[in-house]
Image (cartoon, rainbow, N blue to C red; front, side):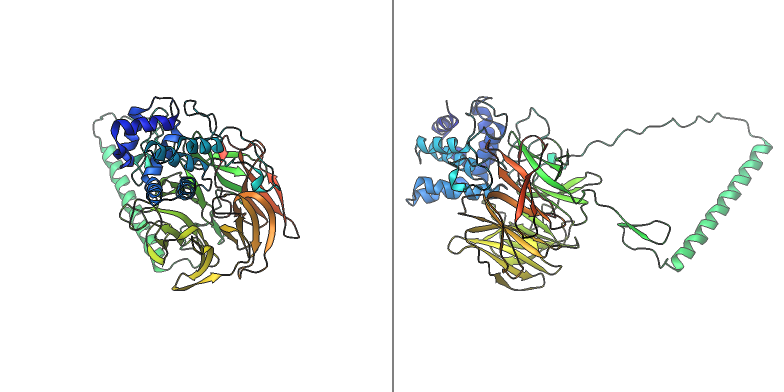
Length: 533
């Protein structure tokens, strides 16, 4: 029996109220479905469709007479964005399956999205995020590929135990996200045993001498401390991140992720893990722990701190100690947030926050915060804000707005406030994935034919919106500048239907050469970060 048929049986047995609560729905699925009837990624996706309000929105528009396929496609695209992926096909399948279970759409619509997704049948656990599907190579039009959207970012945080079925958070991070390894046992020789001896005059004399030496040492140390307080060393640094080498020259702590290394999430069986990946050789090592669903990485300008997305909570990672914690506290207005962006000096973050914590998970606007999650303040109240905000200086940002009546637009705003100003961009298509390179003083963006299509052409342009240059024609996705502004990280679907990591190297004329990164981690690549996002 197909999975959507089992869902219809579930509604017949339990009633439509089974979809009212995401947490209860997940528990019911675990009890009702056979063990091999759905993969972990499919279960997480179905629960997210309920938790993020996508199913409710579909039912609302269907009740108002909307065409089923159009309603599913629109809501599926929104659900995919909310989950941190630009590929909506699997999300459309999940919504169609749930709507079919409620008797709102036909079986044929579910099977169409299942075929488009290129997934394996529900009863067979997939060996990769998607099965082989007809693909295209760079340079061909997106329209030439008949329904082979690639499934990249999906799933919610799961426990590290391989045999546990992870509950979908409702909402916020779980203890698993913050779980740390137990401290290592202390090693070394046991303390010496001092055997009791009879006192003697020599022993008393020795004790007096030791006490005198101890007192003298304490007095000397106190004098040195007082001298140190009386006058600071003018060559010293108050910056705790700078170390004095003894020669009078400060020694900045080095980057933990080299400039030629990307942070790229790779998805296996619906769970994403972030890796360091060399842009030329593909040499890689994991950054996040296995079993934790980590997506949408970003990295600080000093390349010592990383963030990743876990459902609708941002997790901060110290790359030196590997310590992880939620960036914002549960009491913060930005506890539910996404798309953090670092200022050029690393002293501030811009982030999209869902202050009212409504079920649909949509952000309420653009906020500023300190890198440790403190100092949260609203900058722009805009419910249609989309994508990662981009710093173009220490005091100015550009953010995107996705208005269904106007389309995609970009706006410049000062961190000191004031009215945002629209950035004029004369490039056709649906514009997204804006990024800025301080080294090249250029913006880049992705131009897709429609909002529902995640692939498109990569363009660069000046800060005033002029000087547009086509770098590479589609179908590319998820572009991001390199640290030095000479290359662009992106993803592309290869001829096997798999989304792979690529580096687009810029030539002197502004166009680019596509170099697929070899020997990458197992799985299918998600949305990479290179410069800071």
